[in-house]
Image (cartoon, rainbow, N blue to C red):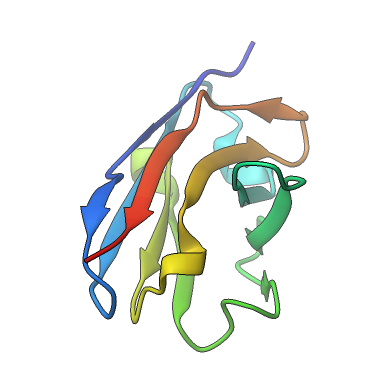
Length: 113
């Protein structure tokens, strides 16, 4: 079973940046599509970004141009660089193995002055 461990969340001021990491166990990481999702209080979980095994990316409309997803298959890790953060980006961010349908435990991101 794949285990996903997120890190890098925290408190940041509006306009600031954070980088999230998701370390995955298992030898098949490079073959799996990976995604980042988020869920704010009282809202449904939404897709933030997805990257395929071939490196193609897809972003949610609210983060296009501000967030970047990429992967390092040698480290079994997928990253999410978040720039120009806004208070509405505040949420718990989850990593997902899209191919195996496994979720990480989530990491809190709070954007506030």
